[in-house]
Image 1 (cartoon, rainbow, N blue to C red):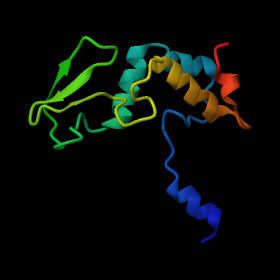
Image 2 (cartoon, rainbow, N blue to C red):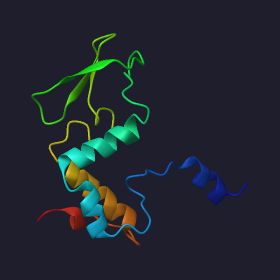
Image 3 (cartoon, rainbow, N blue to C red):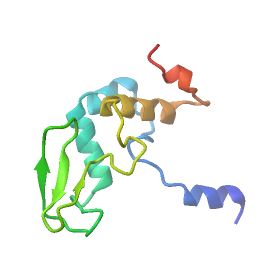
Image 4 (tube, one colour):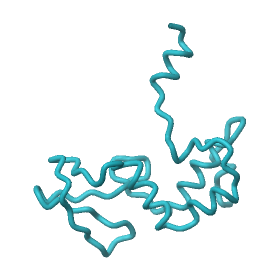
Length: 120
């Protein structure tokens, strides 16, 4: 097996980032609100519903009061957010901003610099 085949099999494609043929207007229809992004991230992170990262329990309650909902496991009491353990953990950026960055990187034909992503 050559290097390219080996690395391509090891790389996991993010279903949100890599959407071939998705136009910018199409992307905006799917991910223009925090609620849409949160739903997509929840489906990607927990495709079979919430699973506690500590005890793998599925029963949970929701804790509000912060920007993102916290999921509290009813079995062990552990709290988790959709962004915990990801590059988005503890970010001050909105999910819509993160999703747009993922889209732009995924759709770029060449490299994209952080300066190009900067709002200023």
